[in-house]
Image (tube, rainbow, N blue to C red; front, side):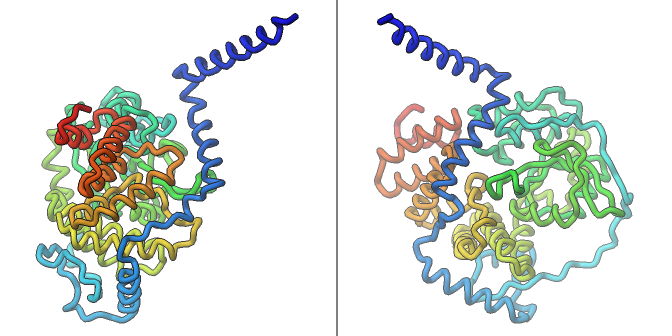
Length: 437
């Protein structure tokens, strides 16, 4: 009888070990991991609401004044001479005392398009846990006869399944390096361009915002757009989370696509490259595309009134200017976005933004604002239920190294590689410090 408690204890331990082993069997883990992750997130977010956390750049008092001055100016019509020229290479920096005004669009005669187009041949996939990017990339590739699935694309784009996000450039890299197809990644898209590409037989991957009662606030999402219907005013998309052949209104597409600077990815066979580039026109050139997108964001800053939309417009301007290496102009735009952020209703705040878009890190780092980089990265890491955000660890490491904290930088770089093995920027940074990953 004395051994009964011991046998019971060993029995319980054996059951626990067995349960853990069963949980990590791939078929079981795929079905249960997201539930465990969601439960853990809900508990953390209940006690530490991430939407209540606000990052403020170091010179916030001055920034707030500039935001108010800009918003006041936007309420007054502006002479056309004060508008930033579309495509200008000399006026990309934002002067906060100047007013942005929309640029007139040249009148062109559009090529007639069908009123309704549906591209068939896409193999719909429901995403596995935390696998939106790989699933949508797999669907888009399937249109061109590719026979893999999201497990193949995930192995390349996110070797750690817990990684919070797959960046558009990682998806493009998979196409370029692992398939015989060609790919182009651009920003500043619009509804007309989507329709023209679809009408010509090119499905389009778009990156957009995503929210609903079943989620803990706003998050990023990909969809494959493969049809449109002018009479009904909507697109047809393959959504890896909700359903195949999902209708999305033109208005909803614009609203949520704005969250990601109207980013789009077009995949095509090499023999159709000339056709794809002709549809893109000037947008085929990356520099021209970024200049166009920066101006598009400026136009929206003038045109929009809803606070969150303005936040996204300022953020988009910063993202485009950053990629044009106008780091000062980008930093000023991001400052405006972060100053607007606290004025967004808490339940509408896109607090996951830095999971998906890292432009502020570049802009602040390359203007010497290392403490802003450090504080923004720390805020992003600490508000996540699981800090599987390799980019934020990388940029915090860069800031720490610049501030003389080499030991802290090494710790962050190694943490970055835990969440994304072989993440090239972190590997290179460690090698520059004389260390092996």
